[in-house]
Length: 260
Ligand code: ATR
Image (cartoon, rainbow, N blue to C red; front, side, top):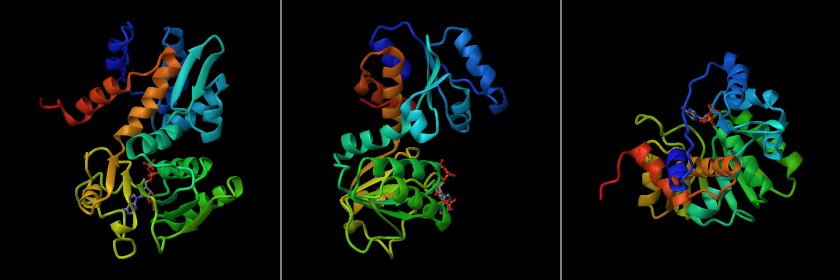
């Protein structure tokens, strides 16, 4: 998506993927800087490790405790986090959800679930319901939210009534044999108008398919990937990201060429 965006804007830039052993991360960042790279994206497990390797941390990286975007500037390596914003941008743009004041059921309390839940709380959703196989992890997130965002109501377990959104942040659905992330004995799709699955491969998990068949509006996680990338693009280039170009390139890369 970045290379397509560079081409669309006539920038003679190039985005490459390099596999880096975590023990070499510091050297790799210094090497990229020495070679005149404009910036980097980092993914698991480097996002947390890189926090201590930046010359400057943007407020976003401080807030989320993780760096997924590095920009080399005269101030040195500046670390940003564009993942968290991508959660709510995607909900607003793709599901047309008004996050403030919404009631949301979040499935999953791993890394992705924690970031999404805290981001929703920081944007003042009205109420959050957390469901996770390991209850203690959901309890830890609930305690964080109670401390930092006391106006947000938070409870563990399924809601009795309706919500505005169900968000799957578990890894269930990545493999065809996976169980559903949602217990349909405890929660029915008619209790929500919208369902978001952070998984984007497969394009439609059995869970998302069932939600769509039940009449819910559905979106997969590809657009979070798009929005975190678009933000990074803007940080590096100072130009507005050509979103449709990036979305098309991303879809072709992940799902194969579009038949026309
Ligand atoms: P990520 O960084 O993608 O969030 P993660 O931190 O490993 O990955 O989190 C995976 C999430 O999927 C967790 O919520 C995990 O539940 P646990 O906290 O109980 O581990 C959930 N998950 C993974 N496999 C699961 C399974 N078989 N049944 C239920 N939940 C599962």
